[in-house]
Each structure stands twice: as structure tokens, then as C-alpha cells.
Image (cartoon, rainbow, N blue to C red; front, top):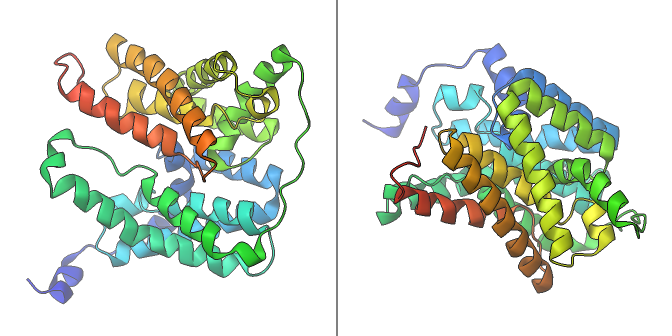
Length: 309
């Protein structure tokens, strides 16, 4: 069948379907297809800065349209699976260049670019010997595109707001429980973290519990590894652990005693990978979560009791 014929045979997506996919692209950052979770995440961005929220929606829209143009199934679009990397690219754009007008076309293009990068990563995992492990592309396309945005927009970069210095270990730990969650989306704000965590519990108590577990374990490991109290308090040392815990406990492995054990161990490993990447001084984004989760899913492939959903 020709590409034109294949495109014509795909079922059309209704206007409400596009809106649903656009919105749920935000909830898919945390592996959920839930419009209420998405709205709480959008509110978390708005609490941090309304311009960031607009850039996130812009990047998500670009990714959603780009994914469909590259042949994504209608269900993949309407569930938000074609938008979450673009949403994160929009957040990364704000982190790099702030809310100046140039940020909006950058976020849109970044979102569009996430689609072909996702296609390449998916091809790597489905058309090579790696296909036996059924590895997800997850947020790797975002990391690749965000790095490109960071390196190509240096003339537009803005200085990050100074972080409050924290010199109390209990205070650093307590604050990190929420900032670990918010820093997944590049936000350093306890209220944003609270809104996102609430959204995770709205989606599923297991997802919320896994996210909280990842935050706790991630912070404890960061403190044990000697990460600075300020960095820990601001969520920069523990945010990847939040994603690792959710991914291994309830998303990419069937929820069981073993999956939760692997989630705890994986979160600890993620903390080590985070520390190593910090020492390299390059853009970290969610690479510690991605690399750890891929390795653990390969290991789980050889453990009979570790079932995939």
C-alpha cells in the first residue's frame, strides 16, 4: 500500500480526540492517561510561571501533531502518548530561554522534532536484536531534543533564579519530598510538587505511592552519597528516582512484591547514576531514570517472576 493510501486508511481523529491527546500529553509524563491528572500538572506549571505552562502546551501540541503526521495510531494520539516528550521540551525551553517571545517557536519546533526522534528510538528497540526486551522509548526523545535546544540557543539563555541555600538536613529532606516530584518537569516549587503528587494519586493510589516512595528513597540516597543539601532540597538529586520507582513498580512491570523491590533498588541505582552525571557537568534531564530503567527491564527479562503488563 502506498504511503498516501496508508494515511487515507487511518481512522480520523475528532476534535475532542485531539484536545484529549493534547491534554493527556501532560499526564503521560508520569505514564498516565488521565485528564484530571493532566489538569493538576498544568496547574503545577502555572503556579511556577504561566508562561512555562503555555510553552509546555505549545511543545505538547507540536509533538502530538508531529506524531500523527509520522503515522501514529489514533489511540496513541488521543491517549497523550504522542505529546509528553514535546511537553517536556516546552518546559526545557522555558528553563533555557525563559518566557521571551522567541521561546514559543522554539518550543513548537522542539515538540515537532520529538516525533521523528521518537520514531528513531522506537525503531532501534523494535527493528534490532534489542526487540526481545520490549524497551520503551520513554523520555529519551525529550532528552535528545532538549539538549539540542540548550546548545543551539545559547545567545538567548537567561540566568536561573537563585536557589535558597539550605543547611539543615531535615529541612532539605522534607522539602525534597515535593521538589523531587516537581523537578521531573523542571520546576523547583513545593506547591507544584504537591499538585503533581495529588494528580498521581488521582490517577492511581499505586502510582502515587510509587512516586512518593521514589522521592523518599531518592532523597535518602542523595544524602547518603553526599549530594549538597541545597541541591537535594531543590529536587535536583532525586527527581529521576520518582520516575524510576513508578516505571518499575507499576508501569513497565506488573505490580507485585518483586516489582516494588526492583523499584526500590532501581531508585537507589538511579541516585548513583545521577551523582555520576552531575560530576560530568553536562545536561542531565531524565537520563538517570532512562538508563537505569532500561537496564532493569533487561535484567527483569531474565527473571521469570518479573512479568510485563
